[in-house]
Image (cartoon, rainbow, N blue to C red; front, top):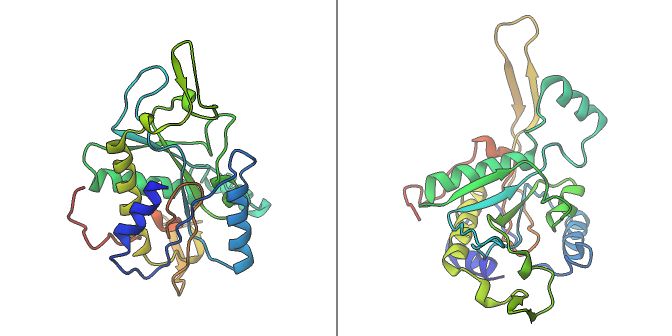
Length: 261
């Protein structure tokens, strides 16, 4: 929640062509209920969501093994779309694109922004929807057809997750403020703020993209410009962003393009 509030505070001083939606969700451990509510609401309201940034577990820098990592954050993204149609699947298999889903390109864009704007902080792209056997509120958004990624600390400590507050054999269990690295959390928040500003300033993604080649030495890529500025939603404890399929490089940078955080 702290990251969401700080991102909203900073970005409230600026105006963007796109709508930013800040959402703090609950019920994740009971079955991703918050994410489902957000996805259902977005569909009912006809939102055109370009991306969801789900920040889930972003405040700890010391792993359960004792390893300290305060210079990296992981971004998980699906490779092929959860709602891929048979026609889209056939095109992907024939032309390639297994690692080029809209969500994967959102992750790539975050990685590039970290390299460009943040000091001593890097995005580690993980080519999976989530950790093995785990899930997050980005999943219902993906299942609804919206691009979404999960942002998570580099070194997790499972003694602080899904635990009842207690002390056993001298070891403390549970998610308490003593386990928060505030400087690290601030870096993750900066990444979100830069992403929100950059993506909310970008044009909407094109429609009707076509690739042609055949008996020509050249490859022709054509598309139709999309009017309007879509809104976006975000799940988990994360600020959302008007990000998305345009992440491959069409987005404009934020107004403070020369600043390093």
